[in-house]
Length: 316
Image (cartoon, rainbow, N blue to C red; front, side, top):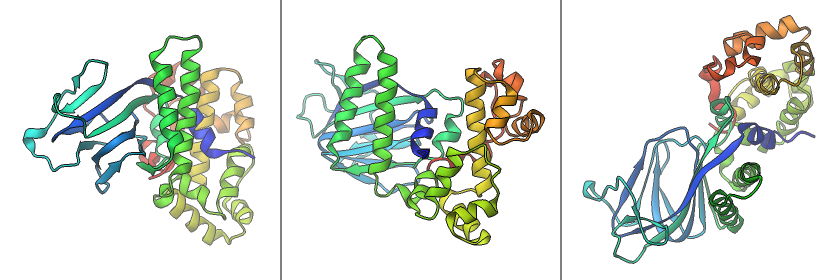
């Protein structure tokens, strides 16, 4: 049976621009406003604070792991209270390659491994919106181990480096999402998959996008009435069932068109459309340009018209 979470993470095409070791000493505060690039961090020793927009402040301790898939604005600061005079604009590079926040002379109060990655998929905003906005996990050592593997591979120039990094990042992201006990607190894919009535339905939609699904047919799969299923799905995932199915079909269509390994007629059949013309109308309405033009490279300039409800794909 299809694994929706793995499919979404794979379609994101994660790549690691860099990771680094960072320490903090004394009072310091660093504000990050560069949205769009996923951020992850493992606390190796000590404590510090994280305040992400829209979330309560978190005290991070040794062994904690944090992932912000869509990289909302956030502030990291020392455990001790800070003021305007403690704001750090540029970390200090210490001998040995470690970056320091706060006093360069004082003993470190916290040590962390931080990293940023890119989602290379043109559908990154749509796909990432299916995931939780913030993942905070305590006591899962393998996440720090995976981060170290990513860091080691990123700093080396070995054969197949990019492919290895992409696979390591996929594993890191999946492990983070499935280890987070609070990932289902917000509407999105993870919450939908945690609902025993919905998980089989979502997997079926991912496994058989070519099926002529209706709300009634999906409700039957879930063992619920049509109205009960519709409301349960919408509350859990954040969008209506057919809206989810349409967005998933369009994400698959774009990937197939970019790979150019199937004709428009074949893609239409794979995604459950009765004809190439029906698929073309749906694709053009959803994306903003016809599939043939998209396949010729139009996706590089397409802004996409699916953005208004992009927040459903992962976790709200």
